[in-house]
Amino acid sequence: MSSATEKLAELEEAAAHARGREAAVTAQGSRASRAASAAEGALGLYAEAVGAGEDEDADEEEQLRLAVRDAREQAEPGVWAAKVAGAQRAREQAEQERDVYGHQHFGEIAAEEAPKDEPARERLEVAYRELEQAEAAYAARVRRWVKLAPYGGLDVQTDVPRLPTAGSPDEVRSRFAAGIPAPTPWPLRRAVEATEAA
Image 1 (tube, rainbow, N blue to C red):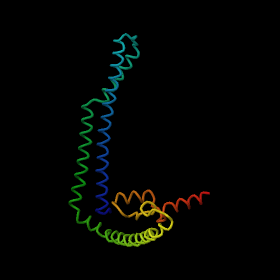
Image 2 (cartoon, rainbow, N blue to C red):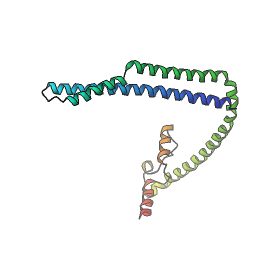
Image 3 (cartoon, rainbow, N blue to C red):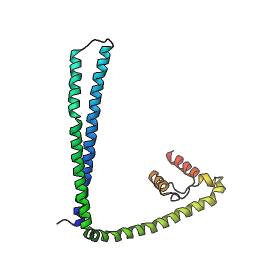
Image 4 (tube, one colour):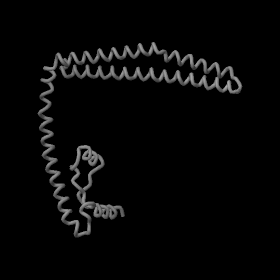
């Protein structure tokens, strides 16, 4: 027997599927409408060319007219409006079933979910302590290079890396995504890389 949480997940998935179906039907209707407009445009261009003096081509005109007829049939507004309405109704029903179940069984769901919280808290607490220690170790190396840099004629402001965890969350994420550097001053790192490459 599935748990209340699993049942809710099934209903959430059904609602998401219904939303996707509604979006797909709407997009299909839009494509059909654009195709009809394109077919009508092609026939109009042909008629304009003939009107301007170009030779008529009965086969081409017939093909263009058939294309317009078929595209209009495929893009029948009433049909697509009904399809979209059906998809919307299915989406609303799925969302309602999800919401009703969630409200009625919230106590059971909460009882199943709450035990998962303590491990998450513990993991974050451990990770934060580790981050603090790692940050302190990196900062100590930066401070050391700040003191040593003048002996090598290095610019403390531009040559010594800064603490990668400083700044906004977006800035920090961006730095770590790109790969953070060692605290070693940039000129020394470039020299080491050049030596290794040789």
